[in-house]
Amino acid sequence: MESNAYPSSRKLTVEDYLKFEETSDVRHEFRDGQVYAMAGGTVNHNLLVDNVKDGLKTGIKGRGCRVFSENMKVEAVRGIYMPYPDVVVACHPFDLRGDNLIIRQPRVLVEVLSKSTAYVDRGFKWQRYRRMPSLWYYLLVDQYTMAVELFSRIEETDEWINTVYELPTDVIVMPRLDLELTMEAIYDGITLIPDEEESGLEGLE
Image 1 (cartoon, one colour):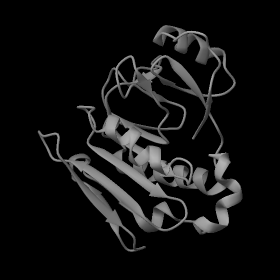
Image 2: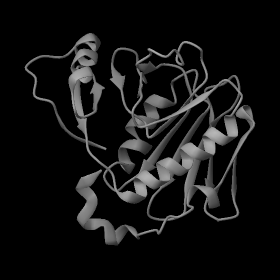
Image 3: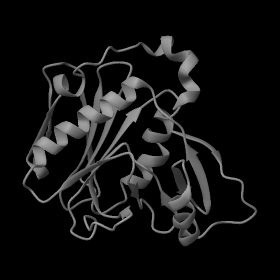
């Protein structure tokens, strides 16, 4: 969910970016010295984020992990790329310090797809997320049809398995966290709007 880069005559350092972000009214991704303003999302986008976050919070309760949505930066590539994933599960004590600004060792990252971000979420972001040693699961949630993709890292490797869920009765399983999410819960209360009816909203996310 990004718009144009913030005007700058030079590349920003990470320290510049963090200082700028502290006083900004709008969130920005950091990418190789440039910042990109984050636009708002549709009602369905926000509802899906809430549903996924609620399901993850229930599933990991009491396990020393925490769930964040949309307002926590993740250092996907050290010093180079810091996006704001839609939902993040973090378990490392350093990441969970009360004064921490950046998640560096996420276990789960979630992106809710829109027409304008699907290509980036499946391509640019995924290419960088998958290289994070701490990451176990990457979840892509479609907001136009009932469809969820789960990328699961094979333990002790850099190989991933892709599983697609499309039925209300499907259960998304994340065994390394002993966690399950149901498709019914993710799409609870959501009235799906087919992609072709969203053409006038493409620039909003």
